[in-house]
Image 1 (tube, rainbow, N blue to C red):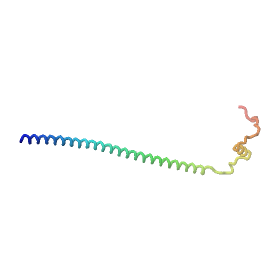
Image 2: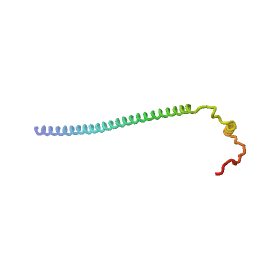
Image 3: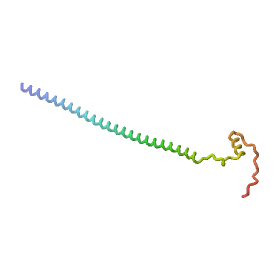
Image 4: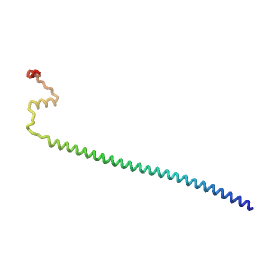
Length: 122
């Protein structure tokens, strides 16, 4: 009877060691998977932080460019208002202005070409 009890104890210990090892191996594999997932999550967070930083730097560059465009337009407008004067001294004579007005309207001049007799010889 002692032999059967001894054999039963050995079988129970062997089965419990086998099940315990199986369970411990499962925990080890789950810990490895958790470590891999943690590293992937860290990489994803770093990628998102970098993408946000890049987006913000591009937004700053875009804002600077928009500000430069706005000030460039203002400077051009100011320059035109500052240096273009409507002075009567610069008026075009009446025959020239009439010719320009006719050309704008699409009317071709009908005046005959004058000979180039006043040109000096080289």
